[in-house]
Length: 402
Image (tube, rainbow, N blue to C red; front, top):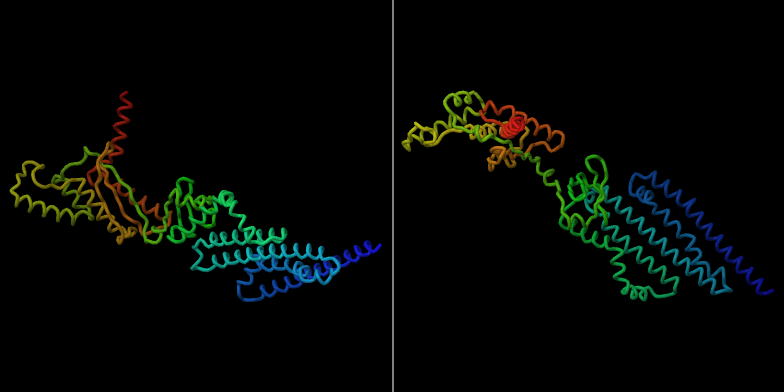
């Protein structure tokens, strides 16, 4: 009968303790949380709204009932130390769990604030925070297990040495991501907002997030690609940030001149080309220079191969330089080249290596198209023939002949 009465007393005491914990939980969640949300909404600052958004106070409210049980269990249940020990142990473990959840929410709040801070918006803060989160949760798990087993956390940490290989295997990607994140941050290789191109993963677009294990890229077709962080270090990538910061965007393209169309300029061709405004000063200066040089060298003008002569392809290069230099869409402060490359079966390449002053994709493509539309249309006016077109005509004639 006494044992039965003792059991009833313990049950009533536990019920009273749990009721007190429920009241504390009700006050914390239904009253305190509502007050905090109202205060955050009325305040002019935004950081308190961010704390509410990341549920820092919501998670913190879970600690109220656990604290009540941990603090009042010895007072409510005096007759049974075993029950008090069990309740205290589980409440302590729960407090450790809630503490880790609160720290996790606070770290998420840090990431959110970093994204809103211009100096940190393009830094891989999320990857650093994820490392801290992993450490926090590992520590919390060790404390919880140590509490439930009534062991010292140091003893459990000592036993983890044997599990190092397993942990390294489980967290392999995280470890590699951490090392890569440190390199990316230290060397400033990638920032949020950078335009990157990673051929191995078919990725070409803007970086929208850098985390511990992955980098998320929004491609130009609005699809999202997730690439392992360590892949940027191991596989390589192209970052277009330098172009974005340079004030120009490169145009590097060549046209082919039919080798059979290359010749010296005769008087008729010279007179015709002097009517081209972009060429008139060049032709006048070059003719005077060549005439004086040939006279000084006593050159026999009976053959064009004697001495120095103007050629149609050299004149074509001079025309391109003069016409491009007058184009307002070209950045003259950056590399400006019109050069001749080695000939091939399609003819003699004349490469244009310049930078547009416009970096936006659509406008850049328009500028480049306008330039080469004009160049191709001006071939016959300068007296040269498109090598590609000539090659195709020959191939077509051979095909028809067969």
